[in-house]
Every structure is written in C-alpha cells, then in structure tokens.
Image (cartoon, rainbow, N blue to C red; front, side):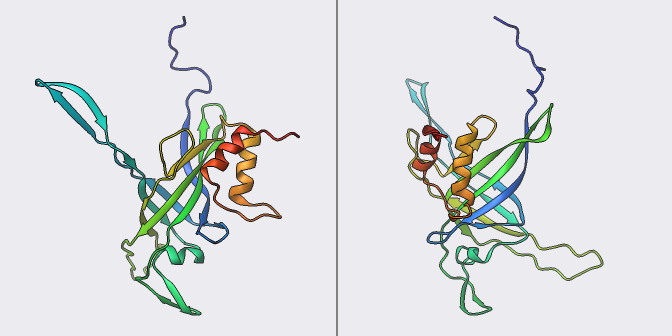
Length: 216
C-alpha cells in the first residue's frame, strides 16, 4: 500500500479550447465549420427520484439524461442553412422559418498537463442528431470599436444505440489514452482523405476502429 500523493509529476491535467469543428448534414459530405467560439454542453434530466417504505428511504433512481446545449460561432457554413431554418429558392435569396434539418457535429478540445503545458493531447467529441432552435441575433450599429456578431444556436439531441452502453448522443475519444492507430482510423472517417469524403461514423464503426488493429 502507498500513501496518496497529490503532486505526482504530470498529474495536473486540464482541458480547454475548441477546434476542428466539422458539420455533418444527412445526405451530404462533412464540411469544415470555421469560426466556432464555443460548444456549451447543458445536459438535462438525470434527476434523482427517491422511494420510501415505512417512512424510510430505500431506493434512489436517476431519470434518463439528455444531451443539450448551445453552439456559438462567428460563422456557419452554407450547408448549415437547412439546419438553421433557411431555404434559398433563388441565388442569394433566403427564406427563413423553414423546417429545420437535424445534423451531426464533431469538434476537438485540447488537453494539457504540468509537464507539456497546453496541447499535450486532445479529445474528439462526436455528437449525433442535433436539432437547432432559434435564438436571438443582436444586430447593433457600428461604432469606433465594432465587434463581430456572434451567432448562437441552442440545440437538443436524440440518442442513438451504442454497443455495450445505454443510448447516447455524445461520444468522447481521449487521444491520450486511445491507441494511435484507432485515432488515425477514426480521423480518416471524420475528416476524410485525398480519396474519401468526411462523414459521421456510426457507433458501430467507432467500436470497430478500436477493436480491429491494422495489420501493418
């Protein structure tokens, strides 16, 4: 047995930033989402319900949890228009309040520690079946110090079946722990290659990428 140590070298780990955003609209190839400012996760549900017998608590049961949150960005790719309730009947003409399409999203957050600082590794986040909801857009007059408009979308999700787990809409892959060959395989799907287009992997493909090491 060893006494607990709160200061081993490399144990002070932190997470920050968001980059490599990719949008996946059903029926289309994945496209780069530049200008992401933040992806805020606001899960709902998970409340505890208590059961009593003869005046004594005998059971706590947590309700199902749902993934929701907010996306903030300076820009959204044109492919996102159908997810934002916009239709383009003629070039440059946009009609709003249209039916909104669901979409998938992937992005990275950076991790660091007390040895290598920021950027020692990263986590890949994959979110399924997002549906954006309208939010305010505060257009303001220009001033001597103009600020770019930050677009914002609240979103909800619908979970998908995930092998050996309960249904989920959010999957995270920690590159500091996962095999490098599995990360490489997954990133070729998420970001595409010179011969293949970027696309959203199914949960089964994610598990397959980790269960099947290449023979080279």
